[in-house]
Length: 181
Image (tube, rainbow, N blue to C red; front, side, top):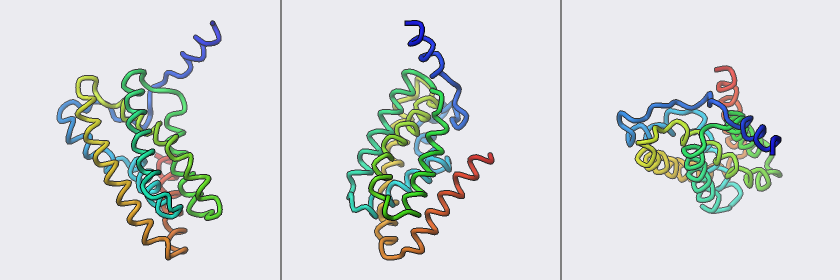
């Protein structure tokens, strides 16, 4: 029992990437956050691209969006967890690796919904309790649109291996910027 309690206490942490206080205009903040948070923007576009490259159609984006919303509810209910920021950063590294290692794309794309859970968790933590549902409606809507945009981009990238690699390099550069910041 003591070990379980200690483990539970270790999982509670203040998120570094979250930006709390979305209660002045929660819908607008929810709509804009995936576009202004580089980590979320790159993960969503990267996952959409992977969905197109692996020919998983829109199953991967749908699972990713569902996991992100589920994570938001968990973050809203339980607060931050240790490792949340690392998992968010990890999502960019895995998406980049999948683009740079075409033979591993399917395998690596399968873990993207897990990473999306932590992106959503950060959203749930940063949303003000009274504005959670309105903020979530905004970020889920724009996240879905970004996943579809990434899918469309991925359909174009299917024919251009060098552009796939450039996009993967861009994801790595984005991860490096987040690490440096």
